[in-house]
Picture 1 (cartoon, helix red, strand yellow):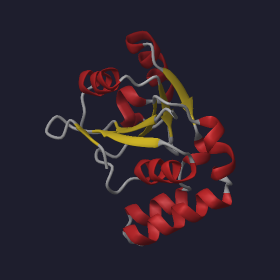
Picture 2 (cartoon, rainbow, N blue to C red; picture 1 turned 120 degrees about the vertical axis):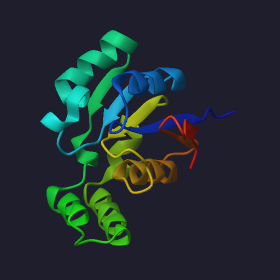
Picture 3 (tube, one colour; picture 1 turned 180 degrees about the vertical axis):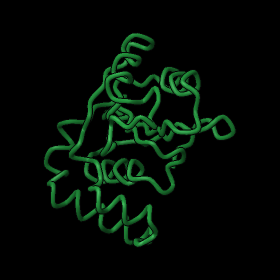
Length: 158
């Protein structure tokens, strides 16, 4: 019998630290895999890289990994945020970026069950963390993805 590999995703915006860490703990997340391009922004609050790494370990015993190879490029991110790229074009360009970076070569050996992709977007629908999770489920056998969401949408499998 092959065990399922559980991968989670979460965004930190529109969540209090209490809600954010509570969602991670309740789900049983073992490691947060930060897939943001900018991990030091003052706008990130408790989710700035150095603070987040400390809080995860001290509050919840959760490990931290910054996987910058999975982050979108600045031009890709800016293009979508400024409205120059449609979501469909963003998805296509992000998929091409993962292929260019040979993600199917290094992602399977990097991920482990209990990992949680982190970015800033509140919901996963228009976020690269969802695209990365779906990509992972295609290239790695028996991956199940669960998105950790807001109080009115506690947890969802998409």
